[in-house]
Image 1 (spheres, rainbow, N blue to C red):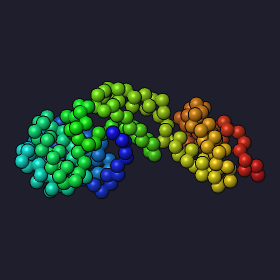
Image 2 (cartoon, rainbow, N blue to C red):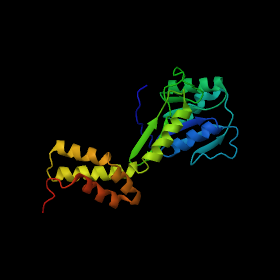
Image 3 (cartoon, rainbow, N blue to C red):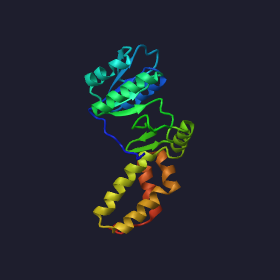
Length: 215
């Protein structure tokens, strides 16, 4: 599968199933999309800002629900494979994407995999193991969070740094070298623990004086 980022702003995601997996998927997509969750019960789980619809749809109801909600993505997250089949088929016929929660590495079930994700805007890291090793995905996500906890700040610092160098006429090759040096510098990563300003100071220190710095 080829990983892509998809913009769900202004779109609807239909989650079928209110169990732990459905709740987790609802929280994931509610950060951007309008989420509707269908389930006969929800327990005390958290669904973020999703709209919870108490219903127990049968397979023959799938097309009606999909047409009614007009989703960009349907998440089939029940423990009933026939019901998941029905909603997957209805979604495909409607032109929507499908994510099967019961797809355990068999990509024939659906066409979207929701990876383990780390967000530190503007940085997003997605990790997938084809459904074969969710524990590994979680481990890698936690390792990244531990080692690169200030990835978002680093991206902001480097982005502004690149623009500044370009505005001052520093040649492209020198800009690339400077940026690579900064993102590989342990000193800069450590300085970001004290905030962006400190990180920017150390970034300039570690690369030394660049063309155009003279006043």
